[in-house]
Amino acid sequence: MEVRNQVAIYVAIALFVVFFILTFVPLGKRRGKYKKGKKVANAFYISEDPVFKRRMFIYKALTFVVVFFCCLSIALSSIMFARPYESKTTIEEKYTRDIFLCIDVSTSVDELNASIIENLKDIVQHMQGERFGLVIFNTSPVLLVPLTNDYEYILDELDRVEDHIKDRMSSYWYDEDDYLEQGTLIGNMERGSSLIGDGLAATLFDFNDINEDTERTRLIILATDNQLWGTPYLSLTEAAELCKSKDVYVYGIGTDTMTKKEKREMREAVELTGGKFYIQGQSGTCASIIKDIERDTKGFVEELEIVNETEIVEIPFMILLALITTMFVCTKIVRH
Image (cartoon, rainbow, N blue to C red; front, side, top):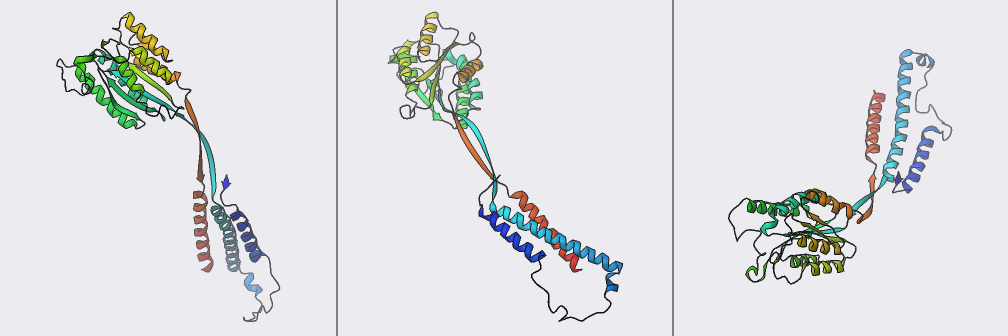
């Protein structure tokens, strides 16, 4: 335990000494002892009276209690004035990671996306300082959630995307005004769909402070079947090389419908960045994939030393109140 006001201790000691001297040390002879009173002969008879003895015992006992409690009150008041406090140091681990989920929203990837999003929501609920973002793409990419640590907003948006994916999976009708279609099919008739390289590259440049803050760990979770149906600006390999140049890890999750060529191409691309490649249903559930990502990047944490100082004045204050109350009661008894 430490105190903020060290001087208060010395002041309290001085006051205590003065109080002790005035109470218990005689300061001189008392002259004129009976100057203003009347002399009474044979007073010793009164001092031998049992009632008088009992009253004097009670008087002296209560006087001692009052004096003793006054000393304690001075001590407690000085302790409170000194402002004692406890200092407790805790180490808080704070992840300095930025995570983007980049998902191909073509209908052939709906089942995979629904599974990934369901498990990602559990991860988001346990984040500690990470920033999370969401990009969807088909022909063109759309930034749904910029990097943020507003986890309630992230969860709401993931719920919204998941609901639309499940609605589309259970519907036989194609709705061109669907939430997932708006913005992701721009130029679809000319350029095609599932332009994976463009989606990954666009996600890379959505790390808005990638050149300024080099301390954070950045990774992209890419979910796609790698079935290209069009002409992208960048191939998947070229986009992966860009990610590598910016120290961004890519974790790829593919569907079990991919051909050997599509699997090989995607595996080579994500491993180029230092990430890993998974196949839904063959490499374990999406939950285990997310756990692998957590394990591989758990070392990228910032340890913050937090010092909490708590003043300890409640207990001395309560004791002081009890002492004052007791002294008041004792004084009333003495007077009666």
